[in-house]
Image (cartoon, rainbow, N blue to C red; front, side, top):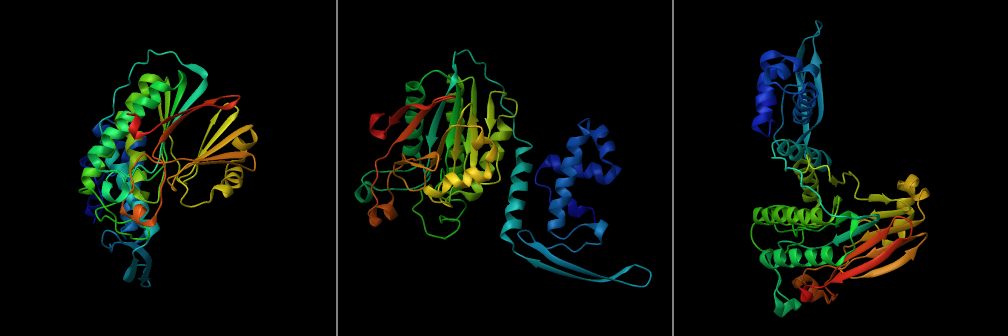
Length: 384
């Protein structure tokens, strides 16, 4: 029955570890045999056992009847005879979205284990310790297809790639020499979240340019290029891959992948949070982030003050960044300035037919550790 552990393995490395674990029966012996860290083996075995239990396999608890992939065990009732031997068992399963999300995240983490780690890049610049440059990209909708006769401009993967690289280079070059860079990818970077061109929650049909795998390849290439550009300018770079309503699952694998890719790069910090509300403290300045799909702008200050009281109480300048609505808005609410960002992408048929019009742009904002926001640079697709 140990073969059930092999069935939930996602990578060759996991299979190698499980086969050794089945053979030797000890994580310590596996670590010696494979010449690797014992704690890493413990964590991997625990993760694999947890995945197997979600499918109904946990022999330590007399659970040996598995359910198909994509389902989880709702309940197990085991009948025992007078000698304590199991004589019968009922296994109930269900398709649980929360559990399936956990499985997906575990699968992403497993795949990231075998990703090649990038070598550190040497920094030779000079940056002001007090300054942080934030480069915001939101609602980029990579993979969306737009026609100029409907929305005023064309948009596809090829156009999106050139637009982002050119605009990001402009923002970096036009910003001050800050020690810290902050790549704020604020959600909806991908237009769809899976093989079907629909929104993940409402199921709205989307205009999409090509296969999902094509979008994924482009997204990884683009975001790696953006990070490398920022590393040439800043001594330390923070990377945020925020959740959006178009890319709920993709935001998870993007975070996991980039954490793995830059694991050996001490100048990169990928922000990790299970909640779609993110913060960063820069001295006396608080930066907060949320895509905007779950909370209204005027409710965000109280939410962040309640969720992150320590950073709220330790700062005097506070800014929250959102997207989602595709147009610019900036307003103070209860001790925090909420900045809603526009998008670089063109309008698709849905936006054009709905009559929603906004200027396409992206901004780099410079924050001082004591004085808050001190500079803003704006770039539009027409400029580059």
